[in-house]
Image (cartoon, rainbow, N blue to C red; front, side, top):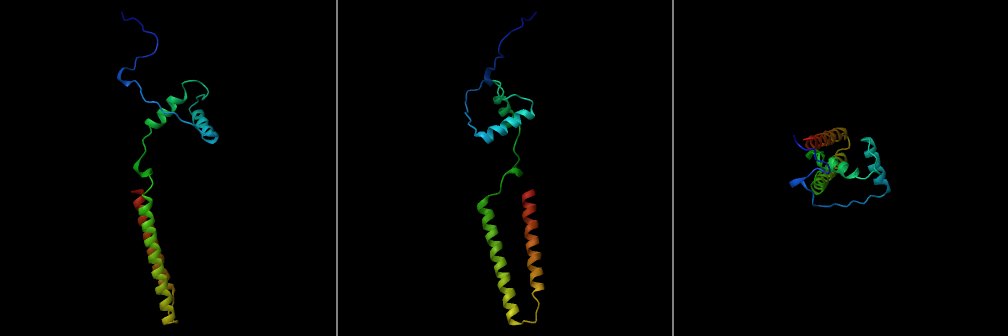
Length: 128
């Protein structure tokens, strides 16, 4: 018959050797308390925070969709959009000066259509 061993369970090769020390300000600590409270854990008890943080960090994988797009690439495309809009506005003003009887509504509708298409494309790229 096996003898019941008491005491701490042996970790073997799962032993943790790396330490990470965290410091929180009052607002962050309050948020941590709220998260711990949602799991019905008392944050003041010893040995409560480490397993909670370990579970939150290691078992919740971040998806690629949650990551932010490259800001320099996004700024480049927004800059190009601005240049295109400026060119359309200059063209519309030039046409209006050249023949005042023509309406700017057609040009504005074309510009709005192009902007809507660009917005749809960026939404599709974000949602993947």
